[in-house]
Image 1 (cartoon, rainbow, N blue to C red):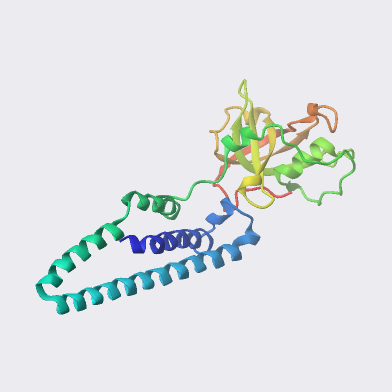
Image 2 (image 1 turned 180 degrees about the horizontal axis):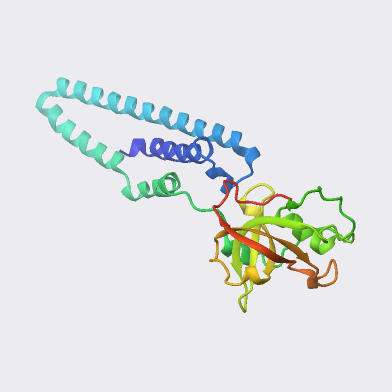
Length: 261
């Protein structure tokens, strides 16, 4: 079975990549949507290489069996003994260290049990991350009774906008829940530039009567409320920004769990 090891590994990895990119939206947990075609192409190539490796393995097996039969026919009983020795040597050469098959387990795990998106644990490791921008005036926000805004956009405007564009607006944001000390909880989102490895955090402290009884960590909620100014713009005192909640609603995790600027 050793001759099929590389084929099995290629097929498993290729199948896992296609499963998360072609047949579902699980790839959004790891990379931006624009990278989907590259994942599909990579997965297809891996499966093609795996099939080629499997065909070569079968041809090699058939060739060895053919050579064994010819040797047996030419040498009779001596051939039988030689065949025994030859087969014995093959059993050692092709058996190989069986522990090498453990290399297939990570690929099999990705195929059957893809890991979840980054959550509160990753957010806690990026506690001090902030947008790399200076204090200044932001562009005007769209009109509307309730404005849907990302956590990253709200955080940037609350911390750096000298024009106070959030003032007097009713805002709606979606994110997952992380907890602080003394019952404080935050609406949190991870911002991805390219892939999950470069994720940075944006979070908003939720206050008000509707914020009492913090939702469970890592649960997804949509919060509607108004901006509460905090600290001096552009300083650590303005971080994290605050939202007074008028409504907190539990929702399902979106297909794309990462935030947009």
